[in-house]
Image (tube, rainbow, N blue to C red; front, side, top):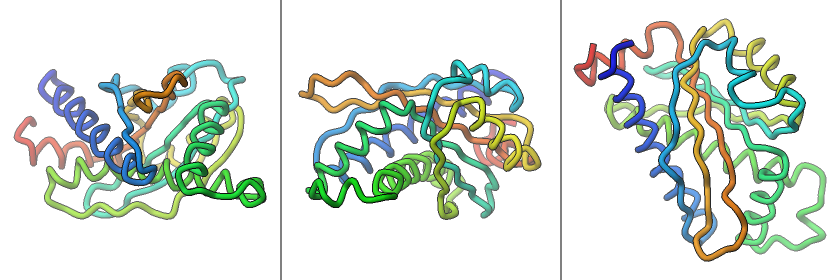
Length: 203
C-alpha cells in the first residue's frame, strides 16, 4: 500500500470518528467528543497482540456489511469502559434502576452504541462511494481479548486477511470521568480496498 492510499484510509477514519461522535451525541442528548484516531493496516493474525494483553476482559460487537463494499467490523471496549458507557446510556434514556439490571439490558445498550459507531465508519466509506452500506444485525460478546480474537479469526478469517485497526477515545466534555478507549476493526474482503482506492483515484 502506498502513502497516498494510507492517507486516504486515515482520512476516512477521521470522518468516521466525527460521524460517530455526532450520532452518539444525538442518542445521549449531550456533547460527545472523539479524538483523532490512530490508524494502522495490519495482518489479521497480528490483531490479538495489537490491542493489548489476551487476558484483558472486553466487550466486543461484531457486524458485517455485504453490499457493494463487503467488509467485516468489530467494535471493542475494555469491560470497565463498556460498563460505564452503558450506564451513561441508561441515564440519558432515563431507564429506571429496576429495568437497567434486567438480563440483556447492558448488552442491548452496548450493541446499539457499537453498531452506531461502526455504522458511522462505514457511512464515511459509503459517502465516498455514493452507496448505501447497511450493516447486519450485530452480535455482542463479553470475553477475554484472546478469546475474542479467536472468535474474530473463526468468523471473519475466511473473508479477508488484513485489518484496518482504528483506536480512538470518547469523552464527555465537562465531566470528570477519564476518556473511554474504543477500538474498531474493519476487515475488508479481498478486492474491497481496490474498489475504494479506484473511486478515490489513489490506485
